[in-house]
Amino acid sequence: MSLDFISTEAIEEFAQHYGYWAVFLGILLENIGIPIPGETVTLAGGFLAGNDQLSYWLVLGNAVLGATLGGNVGYWVGRYGGWPLLLGIGRLVRVEETRLVALRDQFSENATKAVFLGRFVALLRIFASPLAGIAQMPYLKFLLYNTLGALAWAVVMVSLSYFAGQFIPLDKLVTWASQFALLTLLIVLAWLIIPFWLESRKAKQEGIVANPPEDSAAGS
Image (cartoon, rainbow, N blue to C red):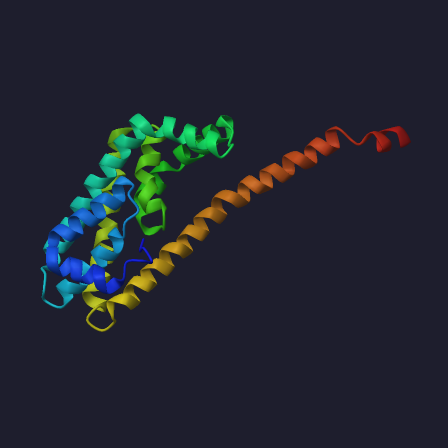
């Protein structure tokens, strides 16, 4: 996820100056839950590797390691402190605890998909691991899907910028990656919200049928 007030040129210079550390720390901090442009730094690392300024394999290795470790830290933060924090935020914005419990249970049912594929989705890449901890996802299962997800994401992003970056400017690659992440976010939101809306509408209609208005009941 790229931050608008940090230019792609500045991120590229940062990656040039700090090399593999920039890739490792950038994606590590983003996967912990800190909203910094870790994906953009990773793309910059692959782009520099494609221009023979860095090693492809070392960029890939640092991206996988940073994403894996960051996800693990985010998981434990969510498991031991995330739920009380979420309840506090819910009270602040007047969301009932029962609704938060329902959302937590819904996430738990889809936790493996969220952890594995979440890195390709805007915002979910930042919050998937803490949410997995909040949902009490078994750690060994989380470890497996977090590692596989980190590997799949890193291979796609580093390879994309490594090969395509030889023909396409970095800022264009970053724009395309951000647009794809936003598109997948919209798809995920639709997948979550539409069934919930349909169920609510169905329950409301059933309630009306079960309890007809007094006027209609009297008329009959």
